Length: 190
Image (tube, rainbow, N blue to C red):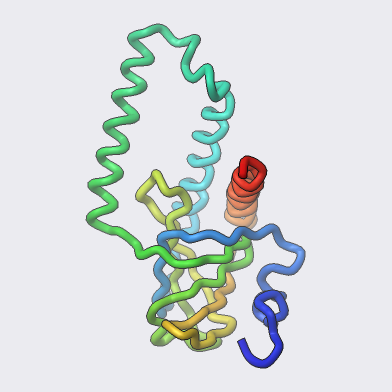
């Protein structure tokens, strides 16, 4: 930031986050200069799968958790949860992304990175981020660097997602709404 600007008055903040739902959180994320297209179809599939899982969890009734299932099905469900958690931890070790502060909207992200080499305004980049802490898979989204500013340690980079099809736009918006709703619920509990 320069002069009297606050985070919300930076032109790139206004461009990415004005009139858009956004969330500020710490996420596993990596950004690299690239001409790659990303994997938009995989991103849509992953975000839709997460939405279905969260819908099922919500429908479980929370505290009643699996009360209507037969005992054998409950045990199988618990074993499957343990196996998935184990596989997830093993996969995370193999391809772990570093965690960074992120402000995320369907239009793009602002990320505080330790190293922003090659991420100059106008450059193409590939944003890899993990949308759920319990799932070691990540989104790969093509982006364009809007701005970059040095920080005491590293740099703050604003990236606008490129070539976002309507289905990806909708999936991102839906996922961010869920994240925002979860953040609001956590703040109310405090």
